[in-house]
Length: 387
Image 1: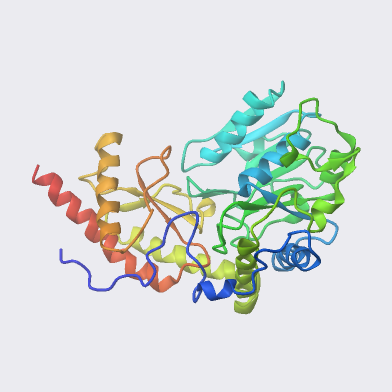
Image 2 (image 1 turned 45 degrees about the vertical axis):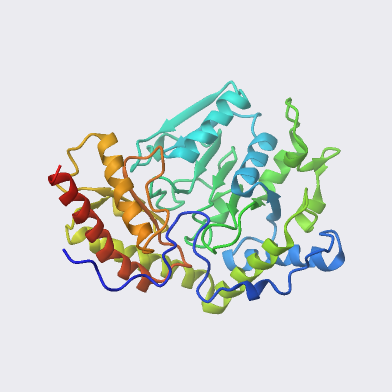
């Protein structure tokens, strides 16, 4: 098979940090308030703007609180768990590496006595009907390392007694989130809108705020996790007064991503871009060129972090370690050709490829990538056959 002639214009298909939005350049940072205090009136206005533009784009209810948190999505979600969990039993959904990490934190770090782990292998979801909503629930809306998403929010009851804590880091801005069903939602700037890393977003429902003010955890809370002061919500954190110093360069970049999202048509346009991108890889799998989906059921397949398996008859029977070697050879070939960077499957996931199809990725680039994926697979197969 000959080497394809056309390459993607942007070879950045990694799952975080992700590709910058089309047309991005460092010129968008020229207005950044570098050298200014983040507590100045002008800087605080920029921080509030990030929160309120996010609210409008995502359709977050007016009575939900929004904060910028340190430590990306991880920091935001950890702050929520350490501050809110404890008064009820907890059901944790673990169907990929981040859900597993939240389970470890709940069991081993917080040491909560009443925890149920609802697990599923990579490529599948736990049985949602087993969840007890009299308990608190911890889940990832979209499994960044498994390519699996929950199909909708219909399974979450409106009359639940527990809180639903949702890590939405690779779902926000790419999928419709049922806000009335969720009490805590977190994401990071480095995912669907292609922002810079280190900063995360935390959204709290009125029910979550009520829990914060009624519950005092028995464990010490690091300063970066403290969302209350003297038993009340630390309102300033949800009004642009960040817990620690944010990067105003990253803030300016986040505002640029939000402005781009608004300009192309808001959330419906972002969702449509992700779906068109997924469709490119669906056509590849349908053509039976040696690739499959780790998430075989279409209704739970992620349109952002798309995970492919190597289903070629020459590769599929190999043991896992050998498959990992094949993946390494394929991804090295693609990276050296400046065709695709950072697309190997996550280290804990089955051997395969993980291709980011979020809104900042151009469909034409994915279309140009597909022949290269086939070329890389066929090239490595020939090497295997030659011994």
